[in-house]
Amino acid sequence: MNNKEIILHNICYTELVYNRINKKLNSSYSKAEIEELLPSIIKKTNLVNFRKKGKNIYISNEEHNIKITININTFRVITVDKLN
Image (cartoon, rainbow, N blue to C red):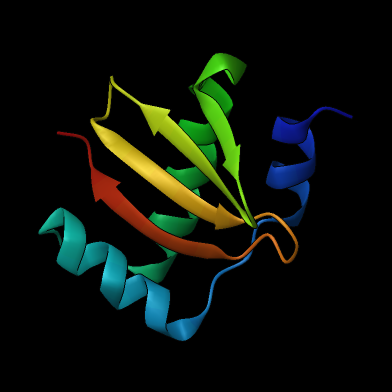
């Protein structure tokens, strides 16, 4: 299994991250929408856009103009930011 498959299999969310994602993206996605959106973006993102730094992995997707930050040890989504 490559990093992408492992992340997709284990991805999880905390209660606080849903609000953080909506705030950072200036959106109002439901929990279910976020849990559908992020894995679909990760699936579409090329492995060259996965960057591990310290305990986190950063997944940048230019098509959706976002960067997803995931803790590589727990597979918890930390945040989602707009790309500059």
